[in-house]
Length: 258
Image 1 (tube, rainbow, N blue to C red):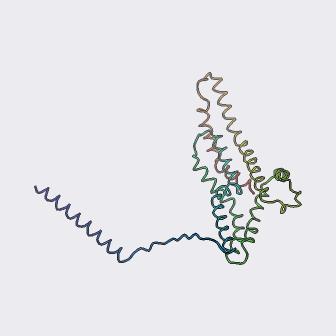
Image 2 (spheres, rainbow, N blue to C red):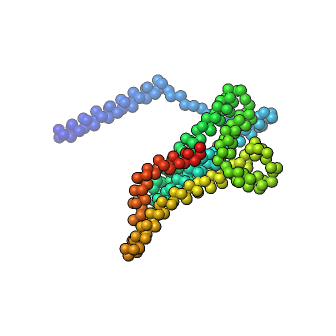
Image 3 (cartoon, helix red, strand yellow):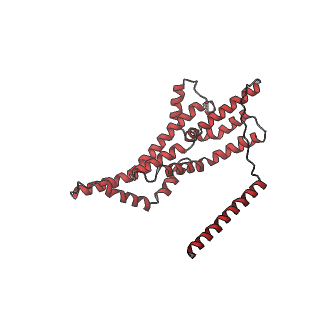
């Protein structure tokens, strides 16, 4: 009986404390209300030309935001980096190790590192002057594209540029300034893919040699039922660790853009 009374008393005390805590917090909340932001969306008819132009600009910005991932992949170093990293995983034959999330995350951060000088030039030459009101929006777009175009031209092969110039059937450009962006960007993409595949081919060679040695050894020993991949995988990983593979791979990728 005494134990039951003790349990009942403890339960009552805990209940009273909880009620007091809730009341105290409610009083504090009533004394100091937390402000909540209010958002208003108004849609009306545009009557002035300035209002029409502003609406079109907003629609254009929303469209660009939806295309931001594609723009990030197509006019930066992301394509080459992610393709080479995928080749590296395939050469190691480690299936889904590293997983796709890790490879894409690494490719994104390497892209930020490689593109940092270009983006800093865009910020200095276009973004900051526009925010200070020193140049117009059109001038900001033109000046902001110049560092990006320099990066694209530096990584694009002339053969690929000539291909799209001939397909577009435009007059032969006298210099790089005469080449429009809709020709430069696809030429840059196929140049990046070719470079990435060349690097991937070089990555496959040492691991292919290991596969051939292991397969020929197992065949000479008469162990035909044992999968060669099971034996060669540890040797591939060991080789990759001994030569510090990630360090060499990342260094080679970054140096390929210099």
